[in-house]
Amino acid sequence: MVKGVGPLAGVKVIDFCAFHNGPAATMRMADSGAEVLMVEPLEGTPTRNVPSITTEEGYAWPPPHANPGKRSPPLHMTHPSALVPMDAPGVHVLGPMRVFGHDHAPHGHMHIKLDNVRVPKENILWGEGRGFEISQLRLGPGRIHHCMRSIGSAEKALDLILERGMNREAFGKQIINLGKNMETVSRARIEIEAMRMIVLKAAKAMDVMGNKEARIWVSMAKAMVPEKCCQIIDQAIQIHGATGVSQWSPLSEMYMQQRTLRLADGPDEVHHNVVARNEVNRYNQTGA
Image (cartoon, rainbow, N blue to C red; front, side, top):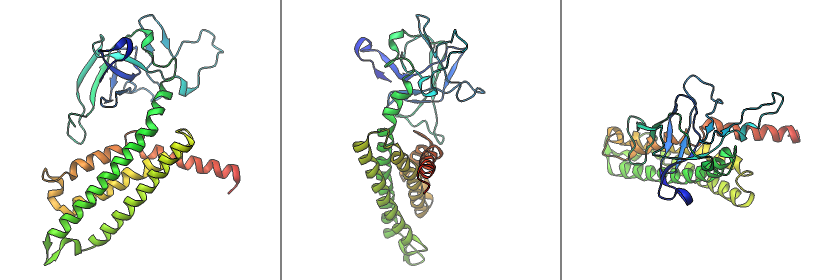
């Protein structure tokens, strides 16, 4: 939740919000830090049955077609975004969502219900059907930032592996010298450096080609980095034993964050599909 700007200055608002004009729209995810509220259709409805926007003036989007033969707008132009004041009638904050059993305060997600919420037409951002465009402008840089922070978590996990392995003994040896722990350290370092390179290349592509053309590289990074970070943190937990999943170590929270990131801003499967589809298209165009 943020302060509004311009005519909404001083007003707490839910930003980038599409909302439902039916009985209730249950909000599953709300990222208050990034000023974004994601809307999910009512349970039991198709995922593409996205909520519509209805304003106080009776304006609706997507618009009903008076002419049955008129073509509908492209799917990516059927999602509006609007500012919704937090004190608007029908906005109900039901409570914090829990992630792995934790409320994730103070930067977690709230469960919000919007019940017949109406706002002025001028609260629609950028114009009709441009919500997807707005979100895409944020998602590319956002995914890169996630990956950068994830690499920092992997570095921290590797530091903890070394600290634990070098300073604890079992069976008369340093833990680092037991089993395949030395190989674990090697693989972690190799994977961290590989993650750094793909994130650097994706960031460079964004600078040179722009977000749209760089999306393949961004998806590569987003598909690779959180998964590899989860593996490195999991290995750090293993070398710590029970301490790794207790309050005596940051590893359990680190794992929770990275595992959640494999769903945030597009799940792994979506990004792998983007990369694979590009390869298939390239093959179809060149035959090689």
